Image (cartoon, protein in one colour):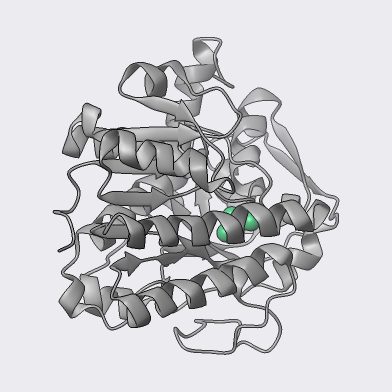
Length: 327
Ligand code: SER
């Protein structure tokens, strides 16, 4: 008999951009002591460390994860630890090791300890050449050209295999670029859409590593957290998909984002100097069709480009005024 779900939750990658905010929200909803935050190397923020249990682990070393699962009698895992696309291109072996061995370790421990639920995010990086670029459908060819994308496709297939073969309850969504003001992202191709806000406030200008017309799917953090928890809490029997839900909110280019920022900071200037990340961005879709998520678990985004930009600037301006823009 599988354990009762969402009583003791382990979050891997809790120091990361999404993990840090997800952990705090889970602690609010499920009780601080019931959400065990873990990270690999980076020191957690004071908020994360002081609000509940925190430990260092390495998801590619199964014994370090198993220790947490037995110590806290974990029934649910949010597996957020991953190496992203840009870092993955610089160090493909590290990306494979963390993303693939980390994922299979979580799945194997899920079986061994009869876990109730495992959430493993995927990404827009699963796509590559050959997909329709606008409104990319849920079911389409997956031929990524980055190591990160390869690990995300393998991860989705592996998760679906564990659902079908062993009946493990696994859920996952294909995140677009995530924009937030609490924790900086690291090593992603969509990171420009966060950096631009910090530099707009700090310096009034930004040199973008993608070209002006590179349109990518994006999402504001509150939608990302809400969607992730909503999928985690959805009725498993109603899900036809499991580990690969397209998850969308908005799409824009660097030029469109800059124009939106200029509405609030008229003197803001953007210049473009595309680097190796341009090729990665060019291999991804412009916008994605998330109707499966809408139909199967009721997904509805709340934030668009205008509202997100206003909110980002408001929060970062407050931090800047307090002399703590970068935390
Ligand atoms: N934000 C990720 C990246 O840019 C995409 O999932 O790598």
